[in-house]
Structure formats: C-alpha cells, structure tokens
Amino acid sequence: GESVGLHLPTLSVQEGDNSIINCAYSNSASDYFIWYKQESGKGPQFIIDIRSNMDKRQGQRVTVLLNKTVKHLSLQIAATQPGDSAVYFCAETANNNDMRFGAGTRLTVKP
Amino acid sequence: DSGVTQTPKHLITATGQRVTLRCSPRSGDLSVYWYQQSLDQGLQFLIQYYNGEERAKGNILERFSAQQFPDLHSELNLSSLELGDSALYFCASSLWTDLGGNTIYFGEGSWLTVV
Image 1 (cartoon, rainbow over the protein chains, first blue to last red):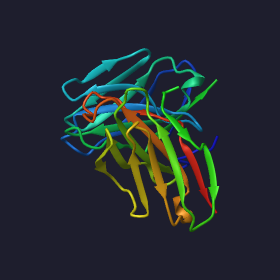
Image 2: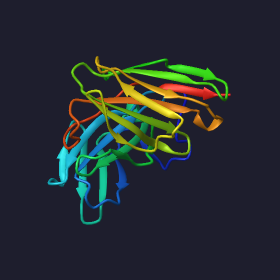
Image 3: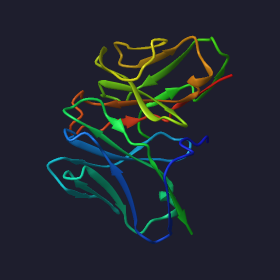
C-alpha cells in the first residue's frame, strides 16, 4: 500500500528490545489520550488509551505514561517484534471535543 | 478488521471533478468522523456527525461536504477537486459523541488521487 508521512520522526530498534515513543501535547485541558498504530496502507488502529486522572496504564506488551506537568505522553512497547513496525500516533481530546492527532512516529524493527 | 467500511478503496480522478466517498460505521455506532491524511499534513479532522446531525467541524474546505443518513452511513462529497486534495480519507466511528473514554475506530481509508 501507499505510505504516508514520509517526513516523520523515526525510531529504529532491534527485535526484542523495548521501544519508547514520545508525544508532546500543548493543550493543558486535554483529558483523554489514545495511541494508534497505523500500518502501511491501513487505517489507524487503537492500541491503548488513558484518562488524565491516571499517569500510567498497561496493556499487553504496551504501557502508556502520562505526565501532565510537562504535557508529555509516551508509549512503551516491550519486546518489540517485526510486526510492531508501523507509524504510531498519539491523539488527544479535551472536554469531549474533536480528537487531535500528533504527527506520528515511524517505528522500524530490525530483525 | 475495525468494522468500519469505506468505499472506494482507490479513486483516480481529474482536477475539477467531484467524487463521493462512502462510509458504513461499526454496527451500533452513532458517530461518524471524517479525516484527511496527506503526506505533509498528517491526520486532519474534517467533520463529525452524530445520529444524523453535524456535531463538529474541523479543517474542512467549503468545496467539501458530508452527511449522515438515517441508516447512519455517511458520505463525504469532494468537489472542484484540486491536485492538493490527493490524500487518504478516513472514516471513523464511535458509539457516543462523548469522546472521553469513547474510542473511535477507523476504516481502511479511501485513497484519492487527483491528476
């Protein structure tokens, strides 16, 4: 499929290593955050979410950390696999308004 | 498979033409969202409908319009197309209009190429 976002920040990791993808947001009123994964030629796929009343949430092999003080969100992927190679977007919403997406980070997993 | 269906998957058309993109939301979802994704703009929110009514507008051009029908499917109409309109157009759906804790699920997108 076609690829989008050719000028995205990139992260390259070795298979089996942990990955950390970062996202900064600017709206201090943002109260709900989601990480999406987008593989080439596909739509964004929900990975994990977190509300602003939490600072950490864990899923299967993924952890999202939220630091409201510095308006920073991160996605940690444990034991990164080749299938994790994709573009990762953070998204935020404030007071149930429109969801805004970050520019995305391209994760490449080397075998 | 997210359950959101978009057609067509690929579309090539000439400048000045008009196209319609179609979306069927996940079963039971009342909200439909349209996003545009281009190489240099990332994911841009265009418009949202909830149960047939427009709820929110983002960076949608006046040449573009959308609607949500009583059966909750939605159409995005793009007219007087320009080369810069070439992009992936995503439809997404969610159960509620309240986004706090309400995840939106994306379709596979419609790839529009304007030549």
